[in-house]
Amino acid sequence: MARGGLPVRTLSRALLAALLVVVSAARADDPRIALPPGFRITEFASGFGSPRFMTLDPAGTLLVSTPRQGRVVALPDRDGDGRADAVVPVADGLDLPHGLAFKDGQLWVAETGRVRRFRYDPATRKAFDPAVVVPSLPPGGGHWTRTIAFGPDGRLYVAVGSSCNVCREADPRRAAITRYNADGSGAETVATGVRNAVGLAFHPATGVLWATVNERDWRGDDLPPDYITAIKDGGFYGWPECFAAGGRVVPDSDFRSTGERCRRMTLPTIEIQAHSAPLGLAFYTGQQFPPEYRGSLFVAYHGSWNRSVPTGYKVVRVPLRDGRPGPVEDFATGWLQGGSVRGRPVGLQVGADGALYLSVDGFSADGIYRISYQSP
Image 1 (cartoon, rainbow, N blue to C red):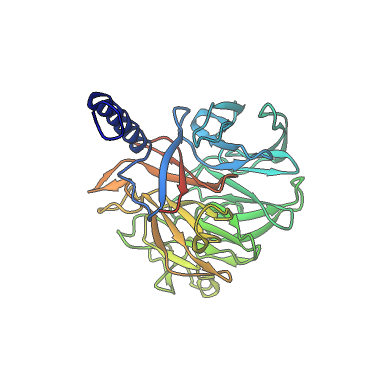
Image 2 (cartoon, rainbow, N blue to C red):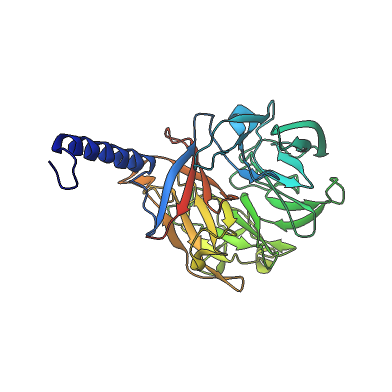
């Protein structure tokens, strides 16, 4: 008999069962992804295509775009166990949908050549009665994603990347951020020279627009830096004539320019390693993470494709105090190990439960992952 009255064989079976539960729980985490103490990452949903950007519907359900499948899906977690119960089609037949946003209970979807507004039923999680709000955006090109966000002014902000690596664009909406009234009227240019601003997010306290920008290729491993920046209204960020490096303006020797425009270039807020390919960003507005993480800016680095030594493939944290950023810190790493890539982080969304949701694509890692915190 074992202490406590259980037979040894029974105790052994109980221990084995407990070990199996522990092993199963460990498998729910990805031990190869390194996080600060107390944080864990688990798979929330997978098997529905390559996910990109996310948003929350009015009921707090996570929605995600899957451009290559031409649809938007909802991922409800009705029992609150940290894993989606189903993949619910919200809208399909779309043309490379990417950015998502809600306003006044309606769903806005940025396709590669337009922005459409849908009526939305949070009970059935279905979008219907589409209306084109912003028509005839320059479609496709070298950068096909279109990202949207509503500002505290109630206006719609739309980011369109360049059609090329380095060139003079014929359409002024390329390599720029434009804002519109909610009905699509009143177009105004917010920022130019942003070669490919993929991520947009408004600071929850200051209302300042922040963006992630992918700079040009084929200038070597370390030039020009990609960047994360607060967007200055009317700012010119250099592309294609020049770029920022080390806090100074550098004329691009591959692009002939008089230098006049470079003299009025707006320097970005944070330079990061070239070819990191920053995409999604989110200010942490939840209560689950420790106090020092609240208000921080999290950014997903999709990772390099044209660097001799790969870089990126991680999620970083930018601490903010009174709207001013501190040094960039690694937050979630491990998708790049020994030069081998296991997945590419894409989008970030703070959930209704206070967890941070991350979309990952590529290398059989397609899915949504949930980063949560529990005090050690």
